[in-house]
Image (cartoon, rainbow over the protein chains, first blue to last red):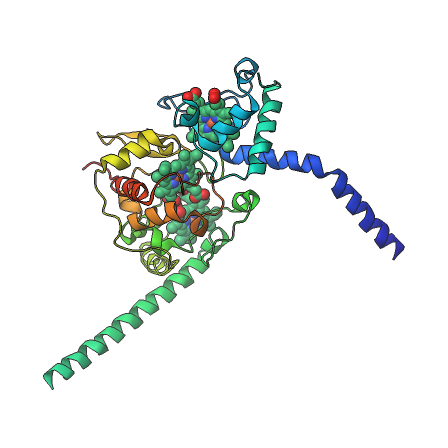
Length: 120
Length: 223
């Protein structure tokens, strides 16, 4: 009985301390599922949709120079409302009706990790 | 009297027809199970996917609304001689579709198609979309919205253009029921609660969805 209790307690602790990384892993899943089709699994802008007749290059998220020109608010806007909302190509889809606010916030943080840069 | 007789005769006919239909459907279902189609395709609604993991765990697309989605004239020959629909392997962004879908013999293809066409959602209104060279639909598909970024489609000369992460739509006019295309855009939670395609409800009006369904439903190989 005591053992079971300890185990349950340990499991509780583990899930508590594990909470933030679990969230990060989820964001990676979200990125790979929705964004990688165009931006590529590692964010270099080379997903399977980018063939020679794709009209514009999807942003390369590893390009710190370009990515640091965008503020976190810019990132959030373009993810929610798509390219045209920031005078960019409509090939960047609007995800506001698909993703939750939490998922969008997670993606903004994730893109900052990928570019290893801050918004300017 | 004559009226009654002929009514009785046509009623008998109707019964005969519908029970023959049922027999075929049962044979189709049996063939579907015997060929292990069930190991990759589920056939009972409603949609089961709640998370991205659920969607990625699948080894084939769900078929519980196959009767809403497909044209039977396309389905029968496809089951006997399946050709790739998705340019990429199912649920993969890195591997090409190798086109290794199991094929059925001609008799099974017919009965399995009969069975699959009985699987419906009850959520598709029929006769709402008229397919045509819809200029508004083309504008939305190729310019205003990113549809062409993820789907192969036919250009004005019949050539194949577009992205590769979604199912190819180049033969959508043969393959898909245009009323289902509209329902798919309007009610994503019914058919595909979790998918790589964005939700367009609230971004495209019902009218624009009908225009784009009319445009997509008109893609056919050039004769």
